[in-house]
Every structure is written in C-alpha cells, then in structure tokens.
Length: 115
Length: 112
Image 1 (cartoon, rainbow over the protein chains, first blue to last red):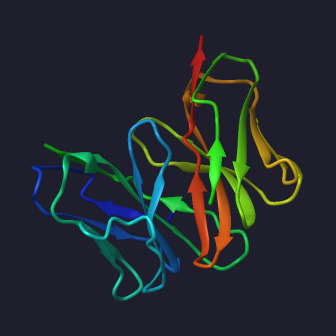
Image 2 (image 1 turned 60 degrees about the horizontal axis):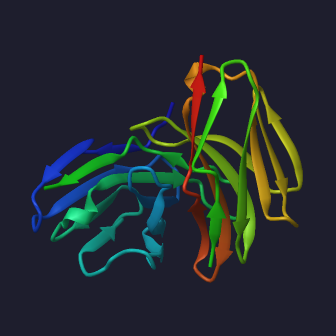
C-alpha cells in the first residue's frame, strides 16, 4: 500500500541550529501539506503545495521557516535558526487534489526536540 | 477565519457507545473529516461528510448538520484500542484555494 514517507523520524537539536525535514508523498498526489502539531493540540497547517507551487503559507513563520517542492514531488521543510518553541511533531500529508472529495494521507511525522 | 471546537477529554467504558461532538465556523465550508490519532502516531482517516446526515462505517458513524455547523462521531461497541485522540477537520475554501483546518482533538480513554 502506498504511503507518505518522512525522514528523519526523530531529531534533537540545539537552539540556533538549522534543521531540515524531508517528505515524499504518495505517487500521483498533487497536493502536499506540512503541519506542525504541538503535544495535546490538533495539527496546524504551515504550508500547502499544489504541484510545485505554494498555495497557502500564511501560517508559516517566514523569518525562520522555508519550504520547497522544486519538482512537484518530494518536499523539504527547513528551520533556521531553531528555537525552543519549535519543539513539536512535524507532519506531512498528501492528497490527490482537486475540488472533489480528497482524503489526506499522513506520513509518520518527524518529532523535533530543540534543547 | 475558522474556528473548530471539540471537548478536550472523554472517558467511556469498554462495550459502550460514545459520541464526540464538533462545532465549527468557516466561511467556505466544503466538507468535514474525522481522524483518529494514537499517541505518537500520525492521524488516520475515519470518515467524511459533505452533505447533511449520517454516514455509517462499521462501528463508527459520523453526522453532519451544515446549518448548525455541527458534527458528531459515534463509536459503538467500544474497544480498548479505541483509546486515542479524535480530530475533527473542516475543509475550507478561500482565496488561497482549499485548506484543511483541524480542531484541537478529543482524547478518548476507554476503560475496562
């Protein structure tokens, strides 16, 4: 069964360091989402791609976060410099896209701890 | 803007029925999803409603009333493995296109 892949699964870093997360969506899924989920809360959308284009990055802290999906397939989310408050689970999801029913499929997530 | 509310925690007994409510306010409603999330794991899809009424899928059912901005997830014949967080998510359509907004989640504990 096709799955969304993410790496690394766990990342521990010190504040002010740079970190990067990778996501490979299900083949053929045009829409890719990056979410941040703080323990005990629901996922918060950071950025949404349609193919290689950013559709919505209104909640992305652009002074330190960046995301790209250069070829419209896999994607990278970067944080530089990391801050203590960035400790969270970073989830990637993909969907077929379009205006009809489209379920999101989530990857296993990257658990980030900033010390 | 969007606003989604769910109870923070619920407790129920194995074999019982539990109803988890979700209320929402969006400007461009285009569907409501329920996800299950076990601790430390990614959310997994449970159900989807876009029209008013009840959708049944095995032990799980989901109901939607668009006029009231209200949905519930009904879990029957509860099992210990149903202990998890249940996330209500609304697909909203705005000038950016479509996006998903998640509620805070309801943590359900099933007791023996």
